[in-house]
Image (cartoon, rainbow, N blue to C red; front, side, top):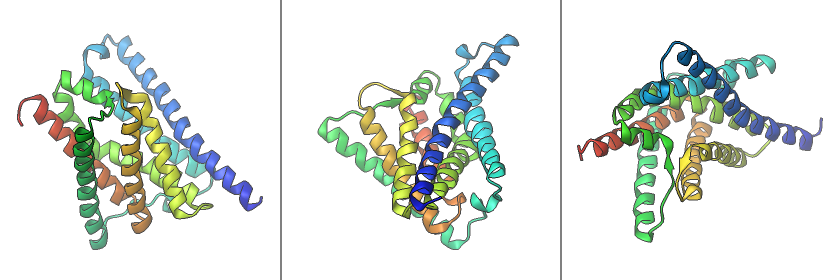
Length: 242
């Protein structure tokens, strides 16, 4: 296999893992929801339970299952997706990464507001505004499932595969673009490109921290903390706490 062919294979694998995982996640979530429906539990009237189920089946079951399946098919060990206890340098990167993401979000929000540009809204926010308890549920899930699950797939597998045949910067950029693209399916309103652009930049920072540390725990913790702060802020806003 030539270098060019192996590079195309890597890009194809990255794309397949991204959208294949989303498709499998949708199927498994539908199957789980059908089971609940058969038991007489109406998820449509229980947004917190529905959100918990979606998160568990997608970031937990699907992303984790796809990772295990990929590693087995490719005869790779878990060193390919290294989750290790952070050392001192890793913790420093985590702290800097969290403040960098939150600072970027705040700065971007201020600029967009000043320019009168709107960003699309994630469906999760819509559900949370109707039932603020959803935001509280999402805070621990950010650390337990969302951060680890999404980093395992997009930084561990997708970026890791691309990194084998592409320059690190190009691997991070493509992995970040794939990560941003999947959010399109959960957006409401105008400004979808703005939202995707922000997601791309945030993903690029996460990818850079993984490239620098070689430890998936680092972007997973940054990702989880970033989401958790957003959900905590959304809860306070929805309940009049701020």
